[in-house]
Amino acid sequence: MTAYNSGNDDLDNAVIALIARAARKKRPVTLDLQLQTDLGFDSLAITALVFQFEELLRVDLSEIDLGQIGQLRTVKDALLASRKIIELTRGAG
Image (cartoon, rainbow, N blue to C red; front, side, top):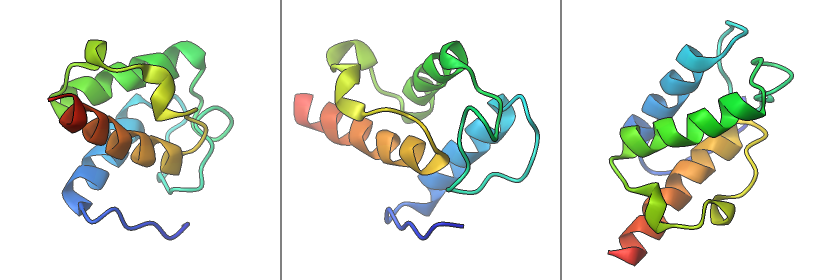
């Protein structure tokens, strides 16, 4: 597993659990897994995942430019995006 420390293990675990539940290919989720090839997400499923982040993080994504969170290719990208979403929504508030 790729090293990553966001300082918020509870949130990271919740994001990983969300990804594991939504994945079409069921396997243990690690940070270096590719969302599409390793976990079976297509572009629509990745878009749906972003909106599941909205519910999980309890933020309103309509207030931010989703292009600012970057491309979601790996599980680590998704964790970083969740951090960025929080940062952007705090900055907007």
